[in-house]
Amino acid sequence: MMNGLALCARTVPQASLPERIELAARHGFSHVSMMGHDVIAILAGELPVAVVHDLLATHEIAIAELDAVVEWLPSAEPVPAEMRSPVGEAEFHVVADAFGATMMNVVDRADRPNGGVMLDTWHLFRGGGSVTDVAAVPAELIVGIQVNDAPEVKRNARVYQAVQHRPLPGDGVIGVAAILADLDARGCTAPIGCEVTSAELAARAADEVAALVAEAARRVSPSP
Image 1 (tube, one colour):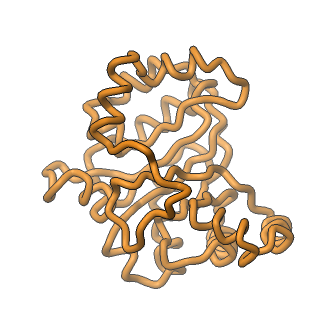
Image 2 (cartoon, rainbow, N blue to C red):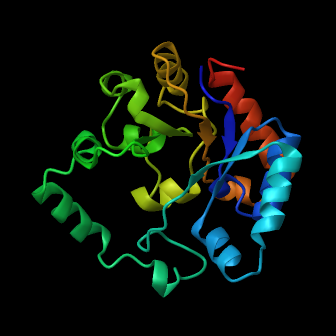
């Protein structure tokens, strides 16, 4: 059985980490995600670790994931130099292809007990994948899941659609419910992260967004 729902930071960018934790508890999430800027705030002493621990314990919320920071994505603020990738997206793919760095190859060759696959339904779909491809991945290797959806017709550039126009899970053509049903049936225990990056949702109150996303995620989830 999957391990609850996670409220991802990019779904409620208008909320700070403490606010995200409180939102998650209020709307029935069991986990939250963290972003690079959360880590920076903690390291700078702006957000004491003890405060974060207390909030997590009080609300019985766990950290599901620390999301990646990639400098080529559009952002309102520049990525700090110390977190900036030394290469751009195009160069990254050239190097990955040269080394045969497929998802499974990376996990197999790393052979680490804390390593695994992060499945994001948006990237699966836009990369030409399907539930059949997911079924080929051993369930125990999928340690993180991020659900969202995609419209049938692409709107503007791929990157901007990815960060501004993702629909709620179940409101697009990806087939999120089928993917989650397959994973659940095969014993996947990862939490279901709800990452709906949307300019429309970002303009709404964070509490309203958390409620909408929780409801949508439960509709496509095979587990309570």
